Image (tube, rainbow, N blue to C red):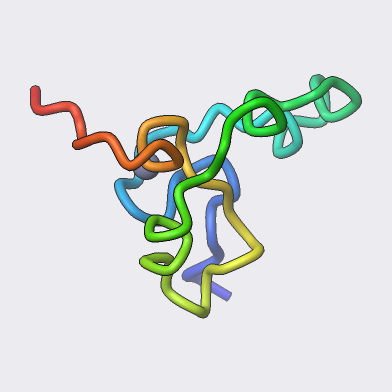
Length: 69
Ligand SMILES: [Zn+2]
């Protein structure tokens, strides 16, 4: 599979999601996402093919606008 999903990237904005669970070195520690309320509208915007495979980033989880650089 050449288009393997990168579980460390947010499926909405493709920024690093900083998920503790996707990194073996921190997988035994609670992820930031355990302590925040994930916005349900953001969850619904995740393509169904990527749902449950990659975490949202903290920004999208809170439905904040993406950082513009
Ligand atoms: Zn994001």
